[in-house]
Image (tube, rainbow, N blue to C red; front, top):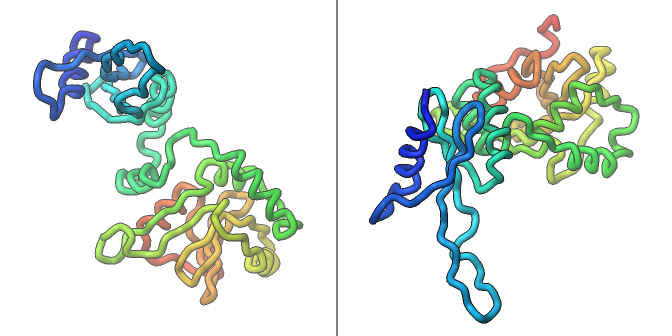
Amino acid sequence: MISRDEALVIARQWAGAGRSGPAPEVFLHEFDLGYVAWRAEPAPPATDGPPAPPPATGYPRAVIDRETGEVSQWPSLPEKTIAERYAQRHAAEGRFPPDVRHVLEAAGWFPGRDHTTAVEHWMVRFADDLAGLECPPVARAALVEFGGLRLPQFGRSGRLGGGFTSYLHPTRGGVETESARIFAEEYDNPVYPLGNNEDGPSELVVDAQGRVFMLHWVDDFFVGADIDSAIVKLIRGGPMPEASDRDW
């Protein structure tokens, strides 16, 4: 268990890394899981003229974990916002494997991410294309949490970006729904657009149970039983069973 005094020592070491001279002063915001730390930057000197801009903006902040003392760096956000996001991330530990989580976070995902406004705008913009396709709650939840993300895939060599990238709606382009309508009729299983993938290219869709499919020109494939397992598969790559061969 890291005490406040111990956290202060760690924070000063973090703030002084790569700097010469005495360790800079820091501020600490204590919360249940640890401490948010940031440098106490000196105030600019007073002048008679208009106020000068700050010497820098976007000073990074750090979180010191109360249990382990581990330091993680965070963007320049209000300390209470960082504490909330850290708690969300802590609660979501184990949801995704480390390699997949790294890709998601690099793409802009974090636990509690809410893309509602962009998703609603996308639905209105493409209302004619989406007409007749019901958006089940699980599909909407997936779009709200992951919408707009660009997810590169590990290639066969293990290099990130060496495979086929997935794009989750709302994407920069439009939306293709013909494949979803054909799939729904063929399998008597209505689906809703989730995104697209460079392989083919192909469409990603999700049904009311949260199962994700890839509609490729070669065949339709089963990606995952839920959005989380589908994201793991899309990022890690690998073979997928044909939708026609799987008893969902």
